[in-house]
Picture 1 (cartoon, rainbow, N blue to C red):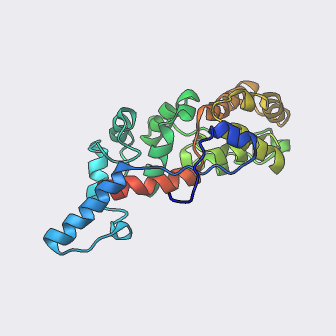
Picture 2: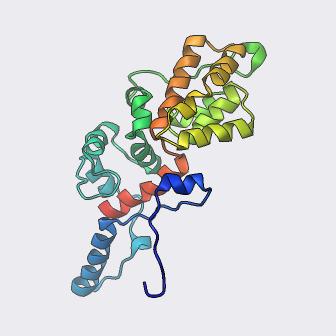
Amino acid sequence: MEGRTVLEWDKDDIDALGLLKVDILALGMLSMLRRGFSLLRRHHRRGLDLAGIPRNCPETYAMLRRADSLGVFQVESRAQMNMLPRLRPEKFYDLVVQVAIIRPGPIQGDMVHPYLRRRWGLEQPVYPSPSPEHGHPDELKDVLKRTLGVPLFQEQAMRVAMVAAEFTSEEADKLRRAMATFKHIQGVSEYRDRLVGGMVRRGYDPELAERVFKQLEGFGSYGFPESHAASLRTWPMRAAG
């Protein structure tokens, strides 16, 4: 770039300086889509762009359920291809879960198999509750119902801390920041006594409180925000469609 200078920095140094880090991905899949659009125009006189690809095509979902996803961004790894026939996505939110669940956080937090068993009716979702004098019995159901009682997303981890252990919004945001620094698991561990103690004080079973913390600690090894998973979900449908 004429007249410009490019400096190379380590991302952790950028973070220490308090500068904004923006990830810009170079995806071969985008080049593939561009070539495909060009071939459609040249040989079939059909104009198509990213916005015009159907977002809920039944044939595309069927292809993904067969794990026919080689070259499809986000679902082409061996682990993702192994998961697709087990989760069997049929609608938008299924792919949001698919993208998020095959990550070190959910895997290490023992969230994958419980979600699958509950999805296919092999066990019922479990929603822990506080003692009657401390809160509504369905307070965590409101947070975890959409993912069948399994905290898959960072937003859910924050809500669990606020609802079950009475974290303030500021404390929950600090927990989010600790989860976001996925190389530093100790950052999440600092909140163990606050989280487990807060849940036990409100009448939650101590063993269950420890299990909840272990699940949230898994996010310290890379868990997804729901918003991120939802945005990434659009690419498998576009690439596979």
